[in-house]
Length: 386
Image (cartoon, rainbow, N blue to C red):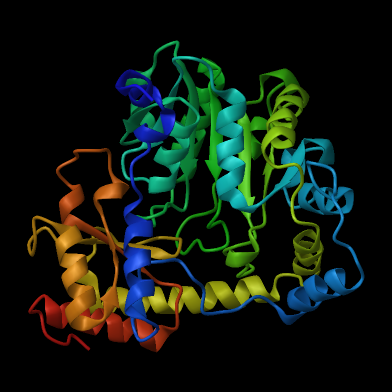
């Protein structure tokens, strides 16, 4: 392949994930590592979900489903949307996790030369997905500043609340401002609600409820959710997305048929069992992570960029200790056996804040997490704050 052709390959524009880099190092180091770099829940998925998955396999429920998923699961998922914001089941798509859902939505709305708007502090996979769809990223600090980034090329706005990695929960005014802007500008709003069950201050983002007040043809919100977090089904890869209009659902279906064929059938039956468990698991999981967050804030408060109001993570500001958080995270792993995720991937490429940031998970076993924080503090010379 010529150099010119190679330079045009879209895959070359996708940055290497700092999250996957540290994950590979942890796997090489072994199970004794305190792994606080990845969102893996200590509270495991309900036993009824495990049994439903195994039963589906034993009963031979392993054939293809339709590309959007099992009709009964889509109906149950549509019912999870509040009041007037509930979509028809025909506009709900079951996906292999919310990550694939966002990628599919971006591919379904992308056009040549298009632009997607991302939060300045963002999940690195969001940037990778934007580039994979052939879109150009621009970054916003606050929904109030979106007009400064407007151009006719803007086709998508990504909103993530509670946010990964910062734990920021957008207030009602910010959500309303983002939705009003997207509706006025005819920009598709992709609401990543992966951490909807882990809000400690404020309320979950529900822009689809605002969308429901608009005429059907004027709606702009794609709501993206997952079973990975609240139901602890990370490795099952089960999520879903609700499209705003029948037309967008038809176009999204084309993308799903071309790239997915169908979601995993046994996993969909596991999802039905998870929904039947009621709210007990979600409430217990929320309480566990929140209590861990409170203890981490008590121990490591001065290192936190801000107190996380939701989600599974705390964003650490290590700029007083290093100008290269990648190197610091590798040294912390080697010398203290603690893994946290370096921060350069959480901000725009070249952003000077990146080398001073790192992400710490809050969802793992509490005492192990606190021991990891103590080791981090000792490594930084702050001693044992416990």
